[in-house]
Length: 177
Image 1 (cartoon, rainbow, N blue to C red):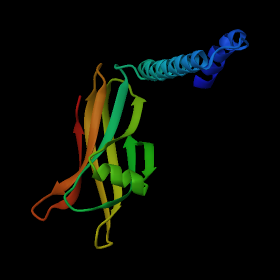
Image 2 (cartoon, one colour):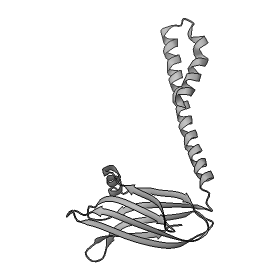
Image 3 (cartoon, rainbow, N blue to C red):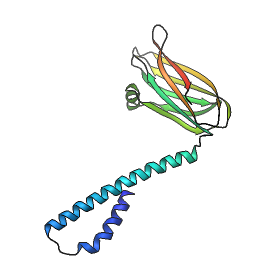
Image 4 (cartoon, helix red, strand yellow):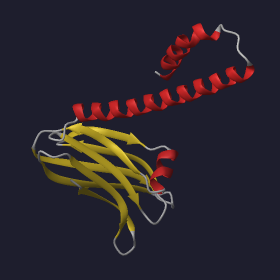
């Protein structure tokens, strides 16, 4: 899109480029042209952002939208391998983690796992994680949340966190609204 806008801007300036000008005038015009291209690029980025937000609002209205995030809140390192989500018994996501994903989560990032539409009423979300502990033993945890979808957007957060006296990794699901 930016390339098209740049081409159109440059094309409109072509009739003026045939005139012979002093070096200072050409340098000034080039600087102005660069500023105009930067400005158009910035406007195109803002337009793209607005279009993405509008698309999301149109495809996922508040009355039916559900968004599920994942957050890692562990004191000990954990190598997350995969996560699976089912909603009302239907698999909605199965995600395999990359080293970059794990590193981002360990630095406090929240990962959006799913955005979709569901009807109002009672629903059950089940999350299952597979991970590798520092001693190379496998960890598998499952948590379930039963919730009622209302006319407002539903936000659910999965938390991988320390549980119990020995700070064993656990999984919890919280409705954020």
